Each structure stands twice: as C-alpha cells, then as structure tokens.
Length: 200
Image 1: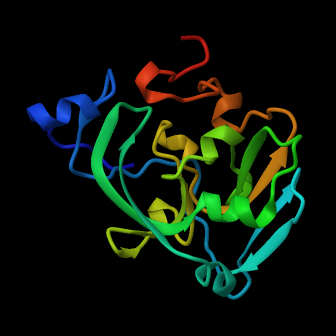
Image 2: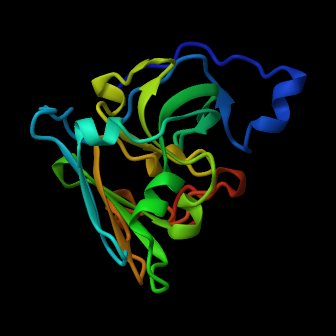
Image 3: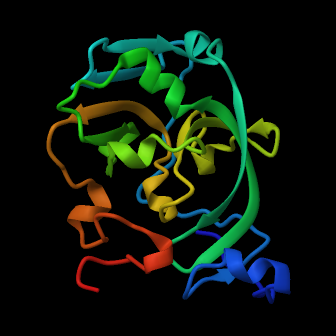
C-alpha cells in the first residue's frame, strides 16, 4: 500500500469537485486486497452472461478491436483521498450494453474479477456515459497494481466499485453484494452522500 505524502489544499475552482470528507492527492495510491494476479493475455478472456439476450466472450484481441473511448474524470477512494482529472481509455460500457442487450429483468450487475473478487452495481449506474472498461491510464497501459490488463471505471461511485483485474459481468434480476459489501462497505458507495459503510 502506498503511503500518502502531503495533502494539497484545493484551489477555489476545485472545491466543488471534492466530495465531503475527502482530501486531494496528486498521487494514485495502490489499494487492494490480496496479491497482484499474473495474467496471460494469450488465454485471457472477458465474459458477459446472465440476464442478457446475447451473452458474449471476448479474447484480448477482440476486446481491443471494439470502439475506443477516452474519459477524464475525478476518482474518490473510500479511504478519503481524491484524485482529479484522471484520464482513462478503453471501451465504453454502453458499447458492451449495446452488444449484449440486457433483458427487461436485468436490474443489477456483478463485476467478476481475478482471484474471486466481486463488486455489485445497479444496472443504471453502469449506463452512464463516463463508465469504462479501461485498459489505459494517462495514455499508457494500466500498471499491474492498478488493474492491468482491464479494470472497471465508475467515476460516480467510490473507487472500490471500479474493480481491478475484471474478467466478466454477470447481469442479474436481483442484487448480490460483492466482496467489500459483504464485509460492511456500503452497498451503493456514493461519495457525495458519504456512503462509506453500511452502518453509517
């Protein structure tokens, strides 16, 4: 886990972008449970299944051939740091939704990741135009510590919802709490409402 050195004071124009209880950092701290997985792109795939009309499985080459999107966003960690103007590139979630066509019953999605990690989101949260499956940060491939080869980016939620090392999306007609949600993190994770933990 990276240590944070210094807490920059927000300038006037940035104050409206900092959720309550957060402080700014120029760094991108490394936070995750467990080890960094070893990934072989020759056998890697990305799968979408469940309440969708057209389940799919993509190889790395097939994923990289999909239309690309670049998003500049602010990221907010439940541990109280925020980083502004993070630039990610990848495939827009709306592209995936168009490909798989969620059924009328689909209301929730579980991100399935390496080593059994999961996190849950309502389908509406994934439908925003700034949600990405990102493989690039700052116009360079993601570093392994930050989720290479692929991570979810959901800017409007605390960043644990932006799952690293993602391998698939399971569409469900019911909610299914993920790893940190089962250990007491808030099910929604809205930084502007300070939804950090389920007992708050």
